[in-house]
Image (tube, rainbow, N blue to C red; front, side, top):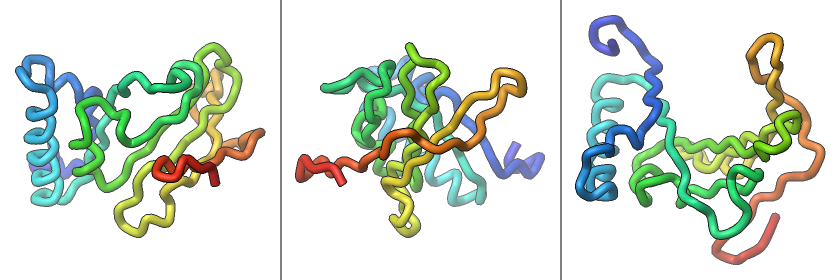
Length: 148
């Protein structure tokens, strides 16, 4: 599609589906991510990957728990090869509460890392729109165990 139709934005949902028959998920993901990064550079397109998350130590993701880079399924290969990483955080038991959109990685400048904003789902249109978050969402520095 990129070469034949000139498509510039490709969505791969779901990255972990590529690992379905791998003997070693981590090794396979390292190879897959390197290959995908090479394709993106070679053919000048943007690849959006959707990934499962591992179970966090603290609050469950389904209950609105904070998403960290290291929680993307398959080890650190996704974080190592990605130029940007985003997370959507929401308590599934409170569907009318806003979703937090969190920027986990911004390789180009690093300026956007830690930025958050709210999204709300409109049931009539099926679209998300930006909203203010009620609480200040803090960026947690894992290395120091401090909130900023």
